[in-house]
Image (cartoon, rainbow over all chains, first blue to last red; front, top):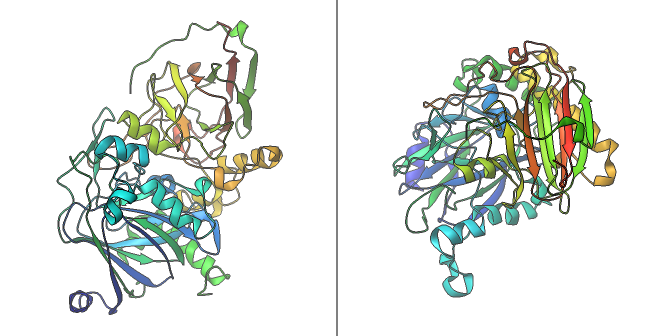
Length: 254
Length: 218
């Protein structure tokens, strides 16, 4: 906890919960509006797949195309907001030392993992089995009544896939550095599904297995001159939509 | 994925030929081996397209699996349109444009409020057309959760090396078309985009036309 408290001095509220998620695993939690989640790539090379849903109406979910086109961006980084398909903001990226996160490459599935790195069964390898992001989301989503039809293009935190002029996609294996972190400030209550399984385009020889630290704290109130709110006129309107939702009864903070 | 290829199919041999006015949807089942052509009748009109495996509708078009498998973000001739399970639903077999978008998604009244202005809330949008299509075809058992990340045929959305997303002038024009051959029995849902706020269609949504050839017709 000392590490967390030290970090907390720089950005307001104390870390009230910290946990480590090993590589190749999955988890889920609901995070209410007003909280801040820091995701830390402890050793470098991590990938964190993430999806967001409105716990009050899970038909409202993270929408990568809306997120990208309304901010005229292909990558995600500090100053960007993550939008639902209903024109509202699940969370804002208030701090980011990685500089580029992918949201168009999806997940590896079981066949992809087996072809790339070979499959290690649970029977044979126990906790060192080669879990995949697709199954991880199905397992976590199933805990909330979500299934195959509810999957969507997810975020892959810490992974960079750059695009050449002809559209060719190139995974940047040198991108994810030890200690890099990204801070999400939640603007509405969110169900968060996450996994630490490998990015589907990672070309390394062995199944990459890198842990991440998660820290939860209270976020500072959104100021009028907030970076994410003001980074584009679109985001001002996204914040207005989200605030209306809260004031008219959406979410637990009504 | 770039390059153009004309089709050898004759319009007179098509089993279906139908105009989709802007703001309308079109939904139909297509058998394995059949060919679907979408014609941009007047130019730079977005055909927002979703595909479903007819035998298992939860196995549906997946933009992320499609672009990752071909390691290229643009669609054109040779692009295999893949499902969430990695199955090939269809393949683009002819294309007179050379590049189509599958990053930008479909417009919605809600996303219009963010992109353009809060008072655009009540304007018609692709996802409204999709929802009406599914409500009017409820025997298919599809709903909002099945409306995922689509293809925008005839739209040009270049990605920059720095990670920007730009909305460039279209590469399409009057009479340009794209054709796909179904690799399995599929359901195709198209919204002919009603967008009035975007210069990509010169603020002027125009009709599309679809043609279908069954597998044994050439």
